Length: 201
Image 1 (cartoon, helix red, strand yellow):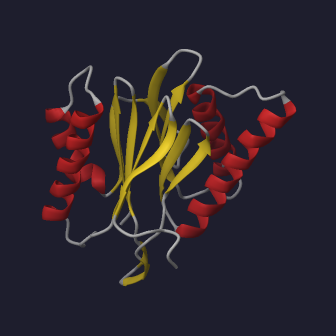
Image 2 (cartoon, rainbow, N blue to C red):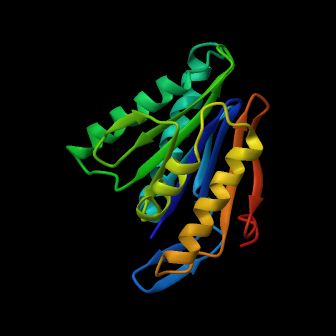
């Protein structure tokens, strides 16, 4: 039931996720933040069971912080972060797998370029201009494929995300009212909008 949508534009990446924590026919929470900030200029939107979602994102973010501490503030590129995540998912697959799929977006300060990566629970990794995880992919990929153009600005990318969310809310069997949208660019990670405040529990 999770929904994660990502679009890369010329100056950054936009990641949107629904805010519901549900299992079977029950909704436990409608203000969950499924987009975890990993570093100052990267974030990961995750779909999957809440326990795996929290454990995996915390594990990744803390290990990236540890890397920075051990290497005198050196930050991994978005590509290196994505490969680290892919390796952790692949290793866990042979032990006790995380049932999480993710979209990892970031802005590399060394190259001044954004990037977006698609990761699934089997350890598959692919750099993409746009993507979706969860049931969203069945409803939104055609919309994003039709609307996406190289060299988009932030406004156009937000418009694509809005159209994808609208398509999902119009066609999906289960109503998802609350979405959180985060923008990652040269200024870092910021919340663009949210349906419900994650701090309000």
